[in-house]
Amino acid sequence: MGAMAGLRCPVMQNTSLHIPMAVQKVSERRAGQRGCRESLGFVIIGSEKTQHPYMLAPGSQFDRKTLFLRACGGQTTDRAPVWMMRQAGRYLPEYRAVRLKHSFLEVCKTPELAVEVSLQPYRALGMDAVIVFSDILVPAEAMGLPITFGDAGPELPEKIRHRSHVDALRDFDPERDTGFLTEAIAQLCRVVGPEVPVLGFAGAPWTLACYMVDGSGRTGFPDTKRMLHAQPDLLRELLRRIARNTARYLQAQLAAGAAAVQLFDTWAGELSREDYDAFALPAVQQVVNEMHAGKAPVIYYSKASSHLLESAARTGATVLSVDWRVDMAELRATLLERTGRLWPLQGNVDPAVLYGAEPEVRTAVRLALAQTGGQAHVLNLGHGILPDVSVESARAFIQAGQMVTESAGAGGVAGAVVAAPIVPGSV
Image (cartoon, rainbow, N blue to C red):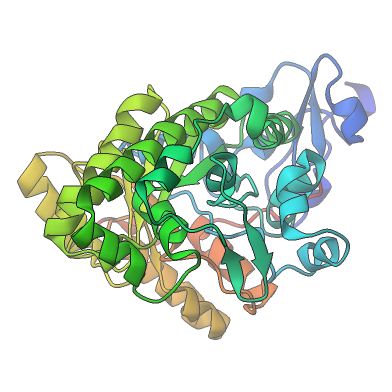
């Protein structure tokens, strides 16, 4: 190693951690060379990777992927991993710069662009997971429904109304019809390396059906509700078809290298528990059963669904992701009593808290972690980050999560140990 031995990594200049091996910055072109490992744009030379502190997640003895997978699996961790839904998006100036030149769907369907915007929040904020940039409606288009994205959000002009419309939907080949997504995941895995989890995702069948029947994100989804009551068999068939294709779609994402996948059931809360059990639940169970995820975690997110979460625990998902209306301590106690297992949870800070001052953000993080003691918990927002939140507030959220360690305990955060955050480099 010569003169390079004992070099301090420049992105860790605010910490006391000492780098015991050579570190040098290299281009992405050189990062794939034999003997090199890339992490946040730096390459570690040699074979001491597992002992290198820069490869570890901030404030943790684990690398980011190990930390994330242990939390999802209900294993002990020294802190909760943290990321944000919609973490690649309009609150970032670099994302807005990309969108000035490229349409939303162009970004989704061009692997190099999808990789770039997926990495932007990781570079800026250093969260513990990178979720691929895409949209939950991509499978609907692959099944044959045209989609446009305007200022008012997505529009599907060819709405599902009759049996012939459902019969016309095609079973798509994820590699042939949505290969841009699997290629983006594969590229992301190569760039961030084996120590950082890359996440895939899809819309859950009920939520996707709401868009396919109503044609947009209409309040209450009246046309979908009409189908549920007037043509229940037709809705069930639509949900089965969506579930079948979603399972293959997620399978392909895992095969491309995703460490975990998330099912977004944003509109599950529109249903009563009886209707959820009769329509949405069987479709999610079909996805989970048919995707054969193996050891890969499946995260199931639902919004405004506190009345449904005991049913959601029967989806087959590994982790339940909940919004800010849910007391996670009460939920975990209820599910432990009902199911006999300690449920891994994700969430659940109100995204609007990020409009507040940084001390308020840090307090909200600590209160969320206090509900679970930071164990079997993936810290996240209760829904996607809002587009006009400041980057500074988003950074405060991530760093606050990475600074609270296991010594906070299940009873609160009074004894929390603060670990110096690592300032991200560039990928």
